[in-house]
Length: 87
Picture 1 (tube, rainbow, N blue to C red):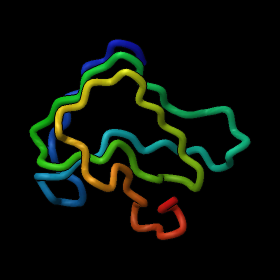
Picture 2: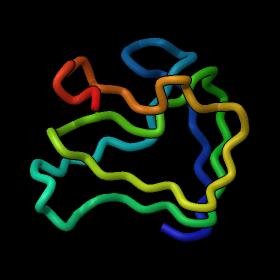
Picture 3: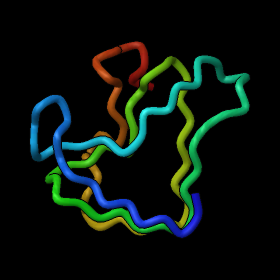
Picture 4: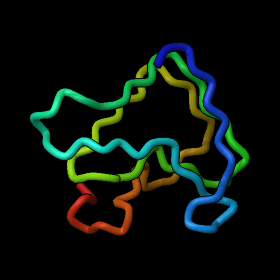
């Protein structure tokens, strides 16, 4: 996606102050899939925003030249309650 404006409202797992932007479902690192955000801007009402969550075992998401205020959760990425996906 190019020149996207993403507005995030909170409601991650019932918490109105948290949110996640992507949930990419790549199952193998050999798959040529993923999400790419270039020259975008992310704003929010949620207090903390995860850039993505691990829906499947090998998600790939790239944010290039994307403006983000101080919105990103310190963890950056949610393992989606799957410890093996925390990497």
